[in-house]
Amino acid sequence: MYFNKSTLDNLDKQKKVNIINSITGIKPANLIATISEDGRTNVAIFSSVVHLGSNPALIGFIMRPIDGFERHTYINILQQKYYTINHVPEQFIEAAHLTSGKYPNTVSEFTACNLTEEYHDNFLAPYVKESKIKTGLKFSDEIILPNKTILIIGEIENIITHPSFTDEEGNFDLTQSSIGVSGTDTYYTLEKKCRFPYVSLRHHETN
Image (tube, rainbow, N blue to C red; front, side, top):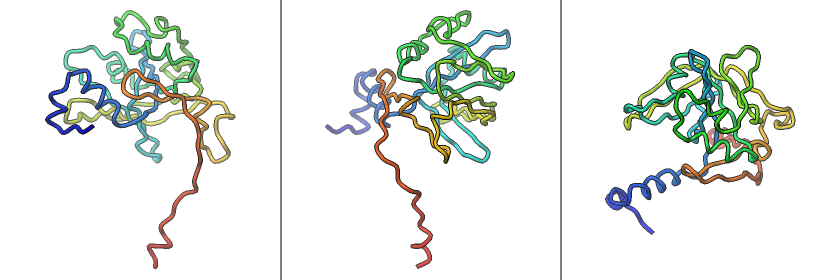
């Protein structure tokens, strides 16, 4: 099977969307939780969370174009500046997926999708109680990309997890705590295969 730009552009719209969304492979599934100025909570699933740097500790994720749509996550982050990113555990895949629905601003996805709000140390935004790895972030910047999607950049304020999910070097065991997603609706569990030592090229560079 071979697709060039022309054949892709002439595919059925939904088939093209499915192909492009899936071609990058399995991505992390995360629930991003926010709160509005008047105290209404929001939580939505995202598959575009990415590490941007460790010092400072920055994480990014992609918002779809606004284009007249009311993006509650985006509005809340810009207004309140704080939000959380929560890994999706296997037991709550269906509830997490349901947060992708278009709910009115008066309805909290926490309530509609049977997820639980949780707060820690006076951090403004809610965490997802069911999640086993949770990160609190402060909005740092936004970058409008050529296709009008928005890269939201946040700096890590805190991380909440159980000690059993990390080893002595700080590596997470994601098989216990997280699932992956391909496209917009297909979910995968994770299995650890192997781990290799850091590869240094210094020896070869000096010879």
